[in-house]
Length: 262
Image 1 (cartoon, rainbow, N blue to C red):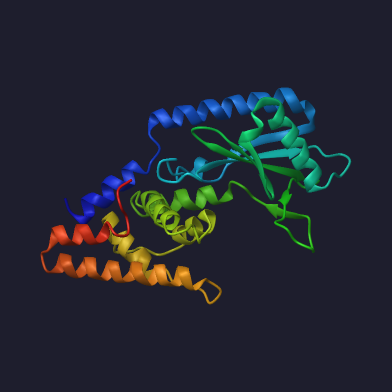
Image 2 (cartoon, rainbow, N blue to C red; image 1 turned 90 degrees about the vertical axis):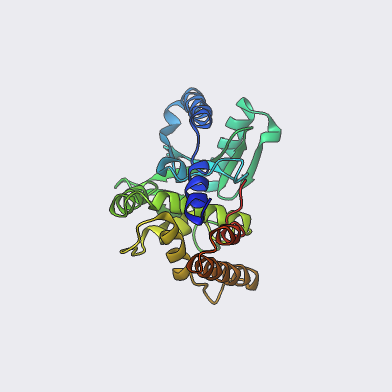
């Protein structure tokens, strides 16, 4: 094998297989019907969003924290605060699922199933249709505005523009991020990748090399993350040098330090 074939194969393995997709689809359909039955007109909408809808969610085997984001927009005529709505969601999941599967991770209720986990996000709409979700613990605001599926189009456009290499690249980089402690949020990482310029790159390998060269830490990042990123850049440089010298097997072994099999 070569660096190219290893990255291509790994990117393919990081894509949900049909069996796993079917299990997730069944769980989403069950969740949706239960929400309708339990809440009725209390919910104006409920829908999936996030990496699952973008096709960049990782298999559970590669990322045990892999989840489906699911938004519940409440009618909320009495102006309940975020915690009250989260309590409503907790009662719902307690009704249909085992208590051991449920936890709160502000601002969401986490439902952990065998093959997937859901992050259930309470939300409300204003008179103009703007969606608001609970802000992460803040002394200054309880709700923040959001457009949950707007980023999907940005990623799709970038993927088309760059010959269908962006989504595989995102999955590889999310895998690297996860096995290195998950310092970067999945959304921030995907958004940053989709916003870069990759003109001149052809193979997935070239995209991977390019994205690591572009990835730079901020002054607020931890020293542990900075050290891991510096190590990654050195491995990329060594891999390129081995390839240039015709040492293809050694180059493949080197890149596997960043992207091991799973």
